[in-house]
Each structure stands twice: as C-alpha cells, then as structure tokens.
Length: 67
Image (cartoon, rainbow, N blue to C red):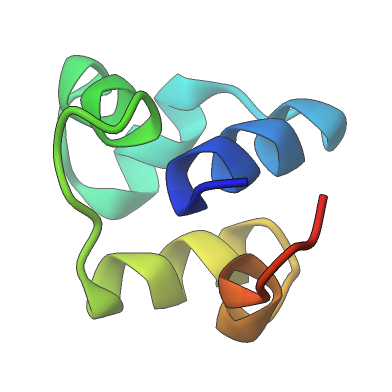
C-alpha cells in the first residue's frame, strides 16, 4: 500500500474529514485531496503533522507491506 493510500484509509477509519486535515495542515481541501490521491507529494513535515492528527507515528505510515 502506498503512503497516500494508507493515510486515506487511516483517516477514513478514524472518521476524520479531509477538511479537518486541510485546516490543521493550513492548506486547501483540494490541496489535501490531491496529496491523498497521490497527485501531490507529502513532505516529511506534513507526514509528521498528519500522523499526529491521526494519533499514529510517522513510521506507521512508512512500514513496508502493511495494510
């Protein structure tokens, strides 16, 4: 599973909206949506913030062969 796919799956499973994520990352909802769809890259700082917002560690999203 790719990074953006794992972020989307985790966010949805926790009932968190894209607008909530975008607000806390200080980006537009469409910008966040593009990151979750893999159309824009996610930098290290963003990954750390996303992980924090979803109560996970950044390494959770980077594990190989995890679902």
